[in-house]
Image (cartoon, rainbow, N blue to C red; front, side, top):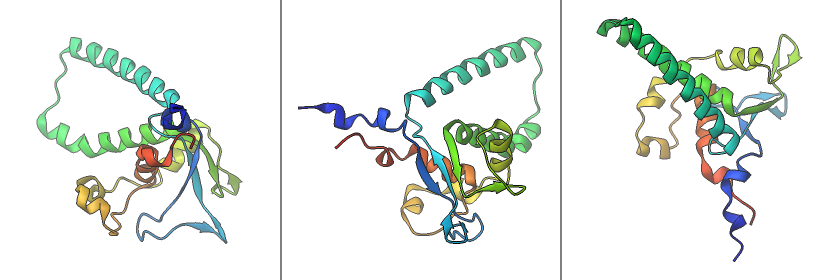
Length: 167
């Protein structure tokens, strides 16, 4: 039996459109009759995982260097920056899987995959705490939790069913 049909990791290298929804209303966003979409690869794609590994190594090195300095944050400071850190992590993760945009513009020009354009796009809205706190039951319901663009992108990228191998 040919098991290549189960190769979801290779299939995840092919970008799929994520049709964006308005974080406030949940309505799909269109440019006239055309849906606004972000082209996204699967988070389990080999190229994405290699990038995650390299970033983790860099962060570990930075954390070790910081620990050597003995600089401790106060508990209040850590709590105050917790949401900002989660937002940063979401943006970094979403940026890693973006491969293009459809019908999305910035200052009347098509959005590109430049780091500047991706950062601008993902910084348009802040994470949805309601979505972060949602349980598995909540996610299975039709209730809109106000996902930011980064959250919408990551949820789609993490959905292995979107990136099935050859059938």
